[in-house]
Image (cartoon, rainbow over all chains, first blue to last red; front, top):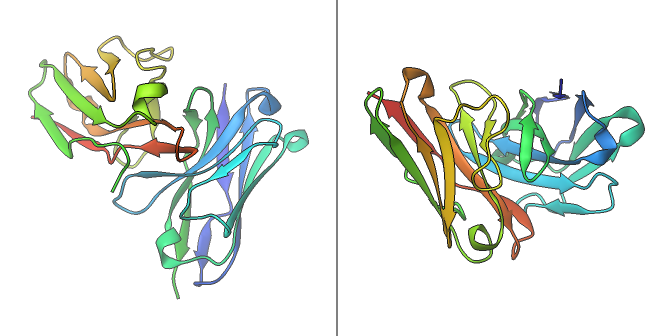
Length: 116
Length: 110
């Protein structure tokens, strides 16, 4: 069955860095686009970034441009989010999602807390 | 402020029907497919509707979706207490080159 599992979250100081990973299984990873979506505590969903199956097409939300970088390794069935220059407002649960006509399968999320 | 506008909350009695609206614009809803998600308390979002009105396998036909112009609607019939959740609409915005979500609607089954 389709499964995506996030990891790499944790507590980081403002200005710090973190790398999130998402391990995919149950589908041909390279055939699907992927996205990261986040949810701040008690708030709604916010789309963060998108990458095509080949990795050739990438989009970011304005709020993270220049600080967060999405990438993928199709040989390892893995999606990544490199997070630099983190701010308090980046504190959120980060979800990895397969994209087929929109995000369809979501992981359980990994929590990122930015605090001194 | 979300690009897509949803009512913050709706409520109805068990067994009744409820609709949740999602209002957008020409650059998003009018020209792209809409998806709907259910987020039960403490869990990840789950896809309920894609392509405006299609249900993934396993989603009961009590859930339906429709779209007209710059608005979309999620309908839920035969409400159950287990339907209490937050519901989000989402679609691609061609002007922003970004996926956008509504602010979410909290459903209470009284």
